[in-house]
Length: 84
Length: 485
Image (cartoon, rainbow over all chains, first blue to last red; front, top):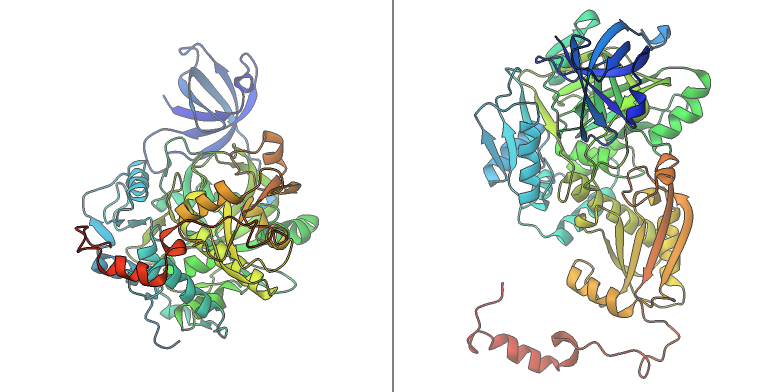
């Protein structure tokens, strides 16, 4: 199980039952902790629906009491090829 | 200038601070996740010695130095002065040195540059190999650059710019940063690189000598490499980057090289800011792609932890902003006695002392200051007379509360340039860097009769004859009072 965290300005950004794009950061212990990935994912307020857990912070870093489970469908490469 | 004995590197500065009792060695292991940041924050809030953290969890061989310039004592040490120097003395020395002849930097061979002792290129490049701290709980990420210089060069004019633009680690090869549109780098990106879709080379230098950091932070028109030379009395030692033509401080602890991607933004923030709040929300900001990392053996990463006063974000910016504004006003022939920004104002209030010899002088001062390149960084100007000690808040506050006419003395300027960091600004103003400004004119109007209209200040030094003052002062302890320090 992986632990992830996401920053949102509004909880409606975490729409359930559909594929959404998110920038999530890993909370797994280790040197990579707090680094980000851009992903296509599904989230659910049912904590046992998906294997990974998602914690939520609001725009100025406030930790939300809302918790989600998350399924990362794929990692998205946003960066233009000319910069790779 | 040859007598200046300022620390030439971050390492010399740490040694000088420890010797003066202005830094402490922390030998027990410290966690990069929150703990190091919390130590720095508490040291700032207590005005305590700077923490030199010698053992970092997960990162053997690295160390942290926090709150490098969050006190005037450490600022004096950085300039090679007596740590007990007063603020006016430090300010006078800064003005003297920065009004001297420029001293050009020297470029040394890379084999002599300590910052090249370790080099990571290609697939070895990974920011996670550096002890990048999580400075505040709830920050948007681990911040690589909190006390550093982002070095760029204008592609046509060749101007070199060192700026302290905060940088967050997004992933092992990517940083995102807050670069405001009115800043030197912001203008360079919007005017040149963005229209062409070209990548802009950059280098981030961390663990600079304190005067190099001061130069990167100072809003001076003098190119930073020369400014470092003027402040330290000797040429700055630079070395060429590995992957671009930029020159970086050879004695810096860590150098990160790469390109800024002007047409591709990633999320940055939130971050604890110099105003004492997290104001600017998470947003899409400037992207830095990393191509190479070089660092010294046993590298020390510097940490500035911004929050409520006082840290170097407030102290050094207040110091250098105030003095650069003083230069501006003097260059215009305005009879000022000085300019001071109290660090606790988070450099939002500029206090100016002036001999009011003509009408409208306070407005002239405010318009010059707000209209200058430095204007976006503050929004209040308070003008007091030449009899008020601008460094004495009690006197300034008294002048403000008694001489500033609620109607005639307060002047508001709307729709100016602001920053997204102003806590009082509306969300719309923050998003578009829209500001507003206010002048508090605490001068007696020049058209008042000085004998009959201007009230008399009732104070010990103003209403008693000189001989009475001297008698009372010389007998003070004889009266039974303890000596006044």
